[in-house]
Length: 368
Image (tube, rainbow, N blue to C red):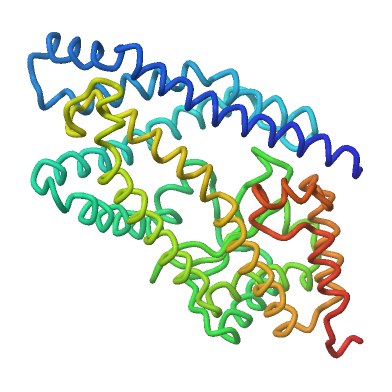
């Protein structure tokens, strides 16, 4: 099992690394070759309407990106998952999900990109700050809409049928000072055999989602300690802290674009960032920033996860259930329990399974 998990992880991370640099190469080539300028000119000449330039251009490069990365996407999200018996999703359903995700991504993208160019035009000196505030605000709106609009596009969920477990989770939420709408079970099994649970939403949309692949295979004690971990994030204000960190990152990347894009624009032959054909340059900035900031973001996440683990153990005093749950999750999700330090540094936003179990074993509770 350990060798199989190592192989799965190796292939998954290799595909992710290759896809990132492949995308950078595509964007760089698209700009350097002049194809981006040509595409913008063709759209203007065909439509005769400058207002349509932005949505049509974004649609064209989105379709081009999807076509050129389709083999990679199909490999890591379908072939690899089926090869390691982690998915039973049918190819038809995979295609439908791809179409839904593409449309949703385009809608979100057009809102963010339109706001970017509108603000850039109206406030050429302070645009980086105003755009950052808009993107931060929009991300909070998305967080609120995720459980009610976005998740139902891909999964069906209903109120948890196990009334005893439902009441137990609701009581746990109250004990930890968390207000939730209710507890729902989500049909994960039609797409993946992995297990998961989540505490999603903002304000009145906060709710618990339990994957059917989890609730049917784990004891009530194990499910409770999983949810205690999720509630601990809220109790310890990790969500607020992450919002702050992400807000700072957004401000930073847009400021970097503001002060350094002049030379980059000149290199690719553009006079201004407001040129729609220069849009791929913005994407390049975000990809490079993501590569550089990934280890830091992963470190912050791992730290929060450790704190949530300890809080969950203190609240539930269920060390045995925590350890058995971790072992089950590791096997079911084919997790690499002892990753190479560099892999852990860059890719792991949770501590490895064996580290979490070791922490629990040293935890002093009423059981021991």
